[in-house]
Length: 555
Image (cartoon, rainbow, N blue to C red; front, top):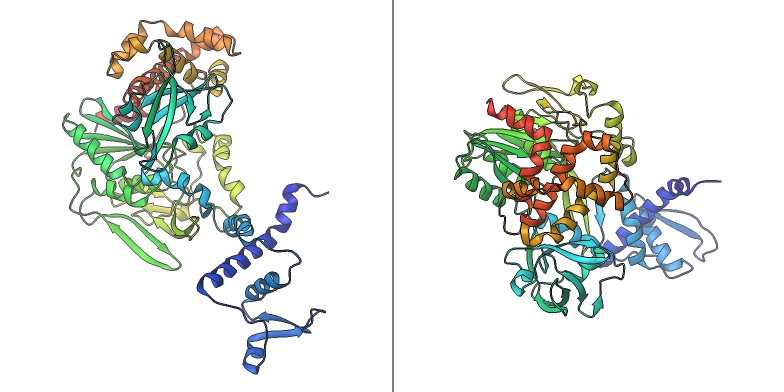
């Protein structure tokens, strides 16, 4: 008996064919083209292959030469035993239409388009809070400064009980459903009732939704003498503006060396990456070029506008750095402009273009490949299918690549040389100039289990919520960490974890003590002052960042 997966594979060609049929039918309908069902003259007979048919009444089957799909469409619409819902069929087969192309071409249904687009656009409309689900209740972690919720008086620590007329506390509601209720068009109102500690009755607020920014520059601060650190989580329409604002702040503090952290950055808008690269390169230097079957080569050169041409720069990457992140890292590396530190990047060298449909859905189709300045494509192979493609990370772990540079096998046919004589390779991501293995020194079974259950994060929220009055008087990560160092929080966490089903293993705890403490303190600080609290504290156990700081101090 065939498995479900085998049956899907067998019928996939049929599904794809139907997708093509439906696509052309919709195109014909939109443009007003109609398919004639009767052949009456010799010209038409030459255009169609006419062969004996079944008992349909015509005695012939019509198949347009090179366009069988159009005839099939007409046949299905006119003759199928039941009414065909083109809309439903379209949504079913459109993903199959692009499934065999490449791993990054994708169909986005209208219902999902906003969710897919928000990170790239850089904002959405909502009430401006971050929250955590604790004990089946929506607990406010913090409010966006000057955002809709802060303006009406909602505060960190409040519990949301009602949204409009719907009870959301104690009803086991999914957090995604809560988000949908709180989001909405700009200038619309939503009523929220909250419980606040010390208040006898719930507090009612009417909040006018507004545009809420999604920041792609997570943090920018001075990590050491004249060394600035900028963490970029994605590349969106607002990224370059955020980056330049961060540079202005760091420059005012005397920074002339920069660490750009692109780890876990899956990419985004290509132009945001090239505009940042432009700041570091000399006029006329190649940043990247793209080329596709229907797209002639297009070069992107640095301009004279760069203000960071003299600053030392290091770029951090890892196995989750992809696409636009690799463009930026490749531009810095191939122009011998700075060092790339970390582990081999993801390996996505394909460029997608978006086609919007009238119903609000979209097709993001790969239309070109991009190449770094030396001419290398860093796209890794996807010839064995998507499943194999996305299992590459597990394969890297199995081969020992996370710990040993020597486990990486380079293809000499993909060897390139930078203007400075450095050898670089294409065909599978950006290989860093300085390889930094995964730090496993603090790992233990106890730590791994606590992390997998999110216990450090959950304890940090519990602790912050309980001690908010004491913590909110602090404004810097240093102040919060100094306070927490005096609070002996590790024994409190051990008791908390025990209550969540993770009994203490004191040998493991000694191995992981520093990581446990720093992670908890960083989460608490994030709950109080957001990322300006988190990153400076977690930096002390960030081995790759410490290598970068040490390397940068010697440049």
